[in-house]
Amino acid sequence: MSRIHVLHENDEWVEPLRTALDARRLPFDEWFLDTGVVDFGAAPPEGVFYNRMSASSHTRDHRFGPEYAAAVLAWLERHGRRVLNGSRALQLEVSKVAQYAALDAHGIRTPRTVAVVGREEIVAAAASLPLPFITKHNRAGKGLGVRLFHDVEALAEYVRGPGFEPSVDGVTLLQEYIESPDATITRVEFVGGRFMYAVEVDTSQGFELCPADACRVDDAFCPVGDAGASLFRIVEGFEHPLVAPFERVLADNDIHVAGVEFIVDRDGTAYTYDVNTNTNYNSEAELSAGVSGMGALADCLGRELHALRRAAS
Image 1: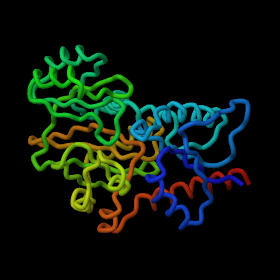
Image 2: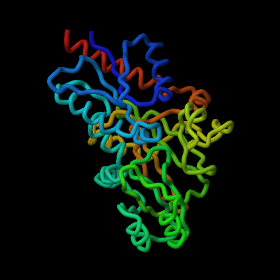
Image 3: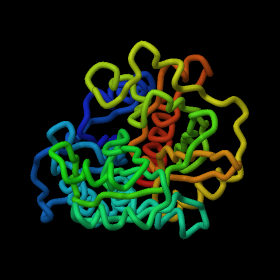
């Protein structure tokens, strides 16, 4: 009998989804996509496949997880399996350049960004940007590689020094720095391609923020600590003109589950800078608001499975 298959490379991040699926008595299994074999001469099992491969997999010693996931997704899609967050979603997950191109195609404003390969090329390209600016990794997740610079000399010292952290794909982004007057960003969550809720995130403690509870335990990049609940607040009655364009971007790129982040500057202009197709949710913020992202996701997967079974009967 067909079932739900969860594709991922991080046990801790999947634990809340396991709980939600178990609570609904939905049959599922997990494919841990770190290493493995794809036999293109064999047919995949029946069911609904949900891809949760993360751009930050290399920070957990799963360097080629995304590449392996791409092969698995190509196999599944070739055989017509129902895949949520398939190949195109993975392409956006592992490339901010691809994200910005997709957003720009729908007229959604993004920060001015320059993609660079090569250390000296980074320094040279920085001269074209207004001050201050930030660096970030093209394949990132968790805010990897985000650093703020107030002059090119400081960037040159960093890039030419031993502390330079290259992006795992070799592409460093230089980006204009958008300053929020209240040091917050907004993350808009979508399940089944539709708006679920928006969460306001306090970024005053740094750029590398992750809403997942597991980040507190084993992820030094996520400075939530004991103050985690205060950093994430679900916005009641959230409405914004970007919600509809975000939904169109997701639909055009076959993305079913995502968190899209934007920041508003002092003039009230919104800049969208991240499409996270491996989105996580903060349980304390959800408890306070009386909502559940993983519950909504489990319900979505359940509907997909029931629809698949009805079509096969």
